[in-house]
Length: 306
Image (tube, rainbow, N blue to C red):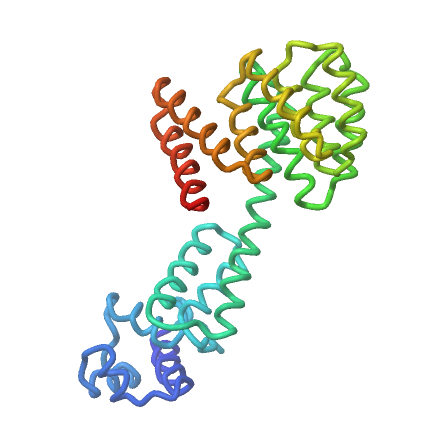
């Protein structure tokens, strides 16, 4: 094992086209010390091995493996580790190494590609884990927390569309509605699939039928407003948002929707007013962080307008 370490120390140094003097200068040691490491007279201590590994573009474990390859840099080696393990801890370690490089110099094309792949693999991992948890929630049912349950169901729909399985989730929600027409949330979830699939006319018809059956359900009116906005029925959209507000929304939902629509229509002052009102309401309820976020949106729009 010691022989393999010494051989790798020499071979990796040479692969990096570095002299013993250059390595010694980088590590603030004597050239003779580097020579003794490679000859096996002495060995690097536990604090020096990680520094050598970073210098040669390998991990410490690589020093004890045959045919170890010197990567262009340490971050590239860590990215390769994550590509193999797909462990989030390895993702964070590789990303941290790249962030340090970014602060010091511009990344090469190969390194930029590696950073992109790190995020790509983590994105895939996160989607898979999110789906596992959403499916678990749906399978176990709402229990006593209907609000969180249906939020999960809604997010699950969005996730299905993001992974290209829109036909599957549309069919699932359509079947669910057919079996639960007395449940306003079944109508809500099916409408959301229609909105995601840009079937706005069908979604509008679904909304009209749903509110006939459930005229005091504010969530349906929020969705009705969203659908009308997509259909460019802006006055009707505002009426439905206001109706939701009259019934009573969960978290100023109608005001957020109105603010977004006002901004899309270029009516910045009205959008700012909505965000200011949201901030005041949330502040009065003790939601300081959320109130600050609403105020930031108002400030953003005022800056945009000036």
